[in-house]
Image (cartoon, rainbow over all chains, first blue to last red; front, side, top):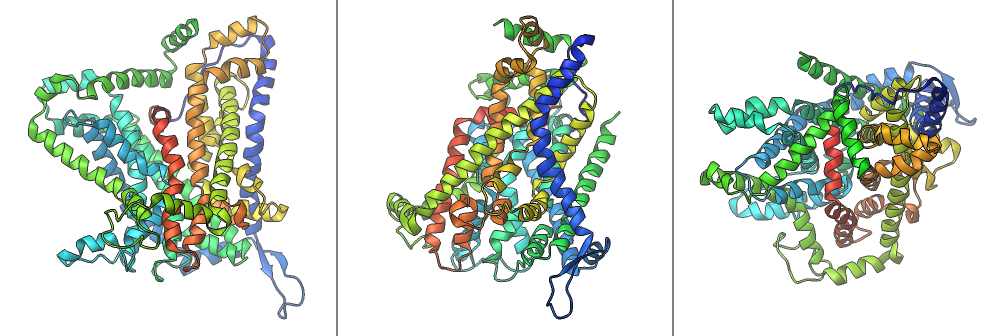
Length: 309
Length: 322
């Protein structure tokens, strides 16, 4: 996603500038109003709440009071092994799942784009279908397929003597990764596929005439040319990983304890909210927002630097 | 007709508008490719060997099986006799009881399931319409007017695209509980009418599809600026707005954490929250109902998606080509 250059609007005559600015303000006002109310206000409110600590007196006879202690909640979060562990888990998840999914999506896009592919429309459609299934419903479906007692997948594998413990402590993170991969590979594939379609045909023809193999064309021409689309899907996938919540939350009730209430940072923050520990929940939300922001922007900068020749 | 010509003119004449040019170039290539990719061209068969066609088809077939298996299982399980949803064989039918199962789903627990579906349609419908309108106004203003602070506004919108919405959910919950909006449909709708990505797309689409000449002509005809937006801009951006509407609709329909936190009253919940509450009820609600409900709950989006395919593609393409 390169920085977008502004559209040049009609050269305004001096008289109309004021009128234009007024109209622009009028058209922007409703969006800006709800944006301020639903994005900036809650964020500021969360920052504000995170700077206070709830103090109760020893006997709990008086109402708890808010005391201004700007660092307490943040220090607590960073020294909370449960929160740190959830961050580490999601990081591991992202490092493995995002490249894996994007490789699948790129491979799928290249295959559908290849001249050897038949029934392209059908394959595009089936890959994109999971996108129309809400994350929690997808997790419900997969939880039935994973079930320890009635998994139809394990029933199929039983004659081979194989039983996959999908919800065991060691496997459950990757079972969640599978649900996310299932849901989003097709979405990413369509973005990459659209970019592949916009490569000028002449370039591909020229490479073919020069005797380049299909593999070489894919690796040396197509993939470099869809780089912006790959960066876009990577940024969106990193953002998606940070919000990991729906899938583990649904699996939690059937996981037999392998998913606890602070499996991911958002689940941890939600658990803190449910326990009425608002200042701490606010602090973890702020930490997460900052971390995700830094991560997306860093990734963006690094990948863009390479392409700015 | 003249409008269309004017649009082409604008794109051709403004070389500086690289993004518009790239997108229009992408369009023509994509259009050409669809013809080529249809498989009707006999040259294709000469250019590719039977082995490569076979290998590609088998690999693509494996992908298709992977993507379809859970949905297939759900359809099969929901068609089995009530209470035998998890019987073997898992992936094949045992009679066809889908109709009576759905009837039982709709009548159980005072018909709460239908209520959830209607709630979802209401939240997603109202939220997406308002979000699309606000985003198109903002995107149009950012594309067609020059004013001080324009780049700042656009920069903030882009930054908001990069921060996941779910991170605002807990702060929103804290804020809504402070102002007493818990258990109020507004607590679901208000946050969902903000669509930074929609503003971004609207700006791209407005720059492409609303030519400055048309706006200029309308001004000379004496139409007011706001009138130009509503009578001309909105109309010319319509196909793009359908795309933005769809994206917003799906996003709101799929949302779980926000409605789960701000709506405790079961009769106000959307279907995602309701179904998960059944699922996690420790057997108070038969799992069979969850299976059938899951199938029914994905049907509205699948239909929306199948019938409006071209609009999906348009939105995704605009996001990728810069």
